[in-house]
Amino acid sequence: MQEDFIITESPTGLSEGNVTLKGYFEYDWDPEHERLLDHKIVITDLDRTEFHDTTGITYKFTSQAVDRSQTKQFEGNWPQGRGYRDTLHLIASIISTSNAPGADSKREVLKSAELQQMGDRYYEK
Image (cartoon, rainbow, N blue to C red; front, side, top):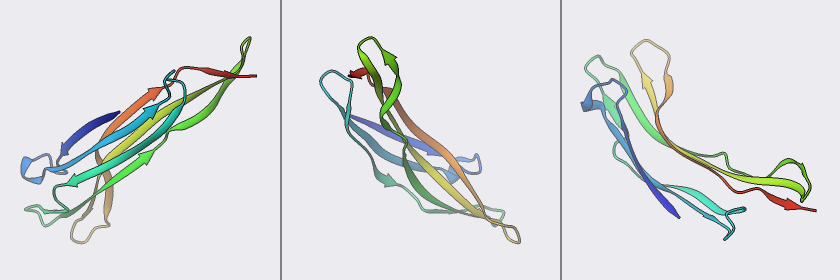
């Protein structure tokens, strides 16, 4: 499956500083929706890499993809056997690094798109 995302944010709160990140989450479960077979984050576009505001601060923009998915997480012993579950957790973020004249640089996550899903529990003897 594929789920597209588009996120837009401004480090100043004003629209002239907007930066937009586009991409998609791609993932595939087994037919029983138990085991996570494949997953990835694809960034297709970051529409700008820099913005200078009227106060002299320069903002540099990058993207970050984080995969926190886990497979075969133990959930306990059940009559059917040892129970496990796979989880899908993908995050795509716009990162801003700013440099004000005479100050230390500041790095922050401006906005994120996130996808979380849990597979059905499966058992092993």
